[in-house]
Length: 181
Image (cartoon, rainbow, N blue to C red; front, side, top):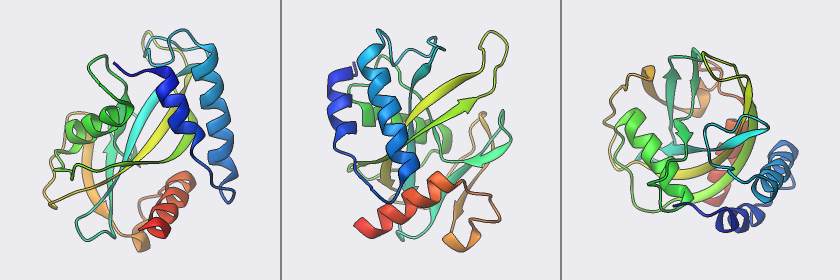
C-alpha cells in the first residue's frame, strides 16, 4: 500500500526552477499529503486526490505515448487513480499505462513532475482536482492496444504536439526528460 510520507519525500526531491506551474503543483500536492487523512482515495473530492500518470517514451526515445481519452475527449498521457494493491506510487502509474495502452515497459522509472488540474463532475462525482504525479517510462516495443477508456492510442513525435494539442505541462515535462537523458 502506498504511504503518504514516502510519497511526500519523493515529491520534495523534485525541483525545476524553469517550470513554475509544476512547482506550484508540488506545493499543493505536499499540502494534500500532509493534511488529508486519505490523499489516495478516489472518493475524496475536497480538495481532490492523488493520481498518477505515465510519460512513456517510445523505444526510439523520441516519441511520446498518448491516449485519446473517451470521457474527456482529448489526447492525454495515460494515467489514473492509485489503488490499494499498488505497493509504491510509481506502480500506480505503471499499472495505469499498461491497462490503458498495453505498452510493454522497461523496469526503470523516474518521478519527473507534478500537475494539479480540474476534472469535470460526472454521476456521483462532483468537480474535483487530480493532484497528479508524473512518472517517466520507456517502452520496449511499439505495439499498443486501445482500452475501453480511450478512443485511440498513438505515438506522438514532438513536431506533432500541436496536432494532438499536447498540453503545456506535458511539453515542459517532455523537455525536462529529454534534458536528463
